[in-house]
Image (cartoon, rainbow, N blue to C red; front, side, top):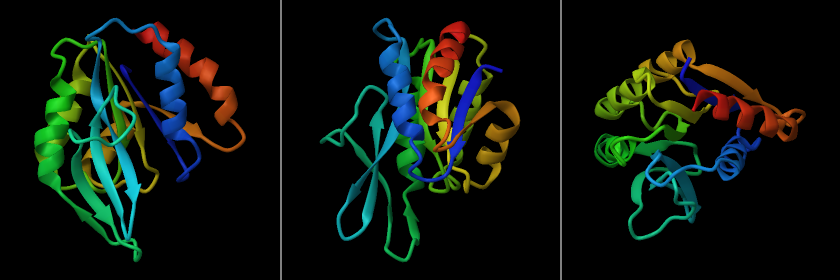
Length: 172
């Protein structure tokens, strides 16, 4: 399989582990495409999409949705369909595509779902990502049946880094 997705409980360190893996790689310029979702806490939790190399929300970030205190999700599927799909394709010839993360906000972003599946089907690209345990829908089902899933727990998260770096390097 050319796709590796981390999964596990919320706030267990999946995205932190992905960041450490990326920092351990010596990637050539233009070899990384994809995106991250970053949260900003205010009266609600706003979720922004940023390019794979970015680690903070900036003026180029795109609002993807919000989570209210009642855990009600307000998603903006067009953000995923337009900006998310663009991030997966730029730069145009990557060797690694980051998708951090897949949850329920993407459920109605059908263009984005096709872009993720297309990326996962490319034989020349490794897809490295995170999928929430509670993610549901066709895209989540596809990922779970077509990717190597790595479960991250409190007990194993520190030990996984070396194995993941080796696995990614072997796959690139």
